Length: 463
Image 1 (cartoon, one colour):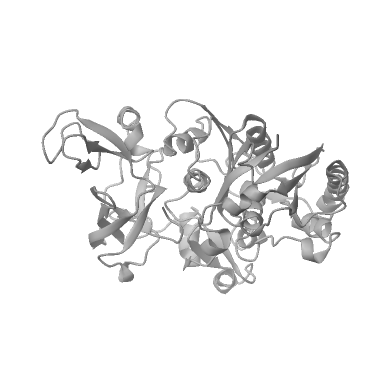
Image 2 (cartoon, rainbow, N blue to C red; image 1 turned 45 degrees about the vertical axis):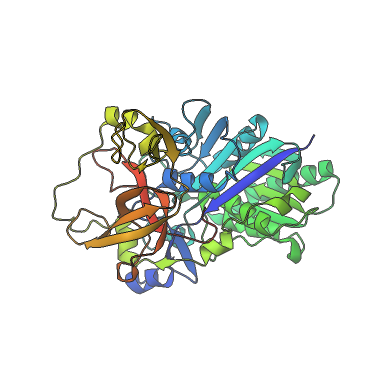
C-alpha cells in the first residue's frame, strides 16, 4: 500500500516589500523583485495555522502534528499546541516543535510521514538592515498531511540522507539575524553531500531523473550550483524572486507550488541541504486530479499589498517609532484563555437547539429565546461572512494604524464585531465578503502573544 502526502496547503502573507526601496532608503542592499512580509499581527505560529487550515481538505484532524520553524513565537512553551488548538483538535493527539533550524523541516516531514500526521513548516525571516539576508529572505508557511491508500496524491518512492558538522550559517539565542561563513566554503561543503543523496535516492527509485527537481538550501550558491546539473525543463521555480528564501518553510512552499500544477505520473525530486543533505523522490498519483479548488501558491502571490520599508523595519523591531498614545494593552491572563479554548483558538460559536439562533461568542443563555444550556458548538473559522457596518479607528492601539473595526454577519447565521486586517481602509465597504484568519491581536504584551481571530477580505477558494 502506497504511503505519502494525502493533502497539502500553503500560505503566502499579503504584504510585499519592494527590494528596491531598501537601497533608496539606506543607500545599500535591495535588489530586484519583492519579498513576502508577514504582517505586524502575524508570526510563524499564526501563518502556520493558516497553512494547516488549507491542508485539511475536509479530512479528519491529524493525530500528530509536527511544527518546524527557525523563528518560534515562544521558547520553553510548545508553539505546535497553538496550531493544534486552532484546528479544533481538542485535547487528543500529539503536537510538538522541531527547531530552531532549517533542517527541522525535514524532521517534521519525516516524522509526519512515519506516523500519518501533519507537518507544518513556517518561518518569518529577516536580516540586518541593508544586508543581503534582509532583501533575499521571505516569510511563508506550508503544511502536508500524510497517510496511505487511495487518498495519497504523492507517494514516497525513495529517500536518502547525509549529515555533516560544519559552521556555515548560525544564529546565537537572542539574535535577530543570522551570520554565515564565506559562500565558497559552504558550496564546497554542501555539493558532495547533495550529489551523494541525489544519487542514492534516484538509484533506489530506479529513475535517472525526475519530472520536477527542487533544491532548497540556506546556502544559495550551493543550491544554484546543484540544480544546474539537471535539465533546465525539470528545475522547479524556487520562488525566490517573488517570495525570498523562507527558511524552514521554503522547500515546502516550492513543493506545494509544484503539486499545484503536477500531473499523474510526474516524479518530484526534493532536496534540502542544511547541516547535511536530504533527498526524497515522490511520484504523483491519479488522486491529484481530485484535489479541491483551493487557492494555489501562484494565486496567493497575485494578491498583495505593498508595505513601506520604514513600516517593515518597525514590524521587525529594528525601528522603534513613537507608540500609540494610548495605554499599553494588558497581557491576556492564562486561566480565562484556557477556559475559553474552543472559542479563542478554534473560533467556535454556539447554536441554540430551541430557536436555531447562532450566538457569537458562544453563550449558555440564548440571546434570542433565553434557553439555558440548550446549545451545540458550531465551528465558524471556515465560514464566510458579510460586512454589515464598519468604522475606521485612528485612536486605538495598533502597530499599523488606523484599526478597521467591522460588524460581520456569517453565512448561516451569527453576527460578530472584530478587526479587519490585510485591507485598505479607503476601499472597505458594506457588503464586502470576508473570511476569518488567525492572528495576534496586538504587539506582544509583557511577553505574551494574544492569539485570536480577525476578518480579512475573502480570497479565491475560501470556504
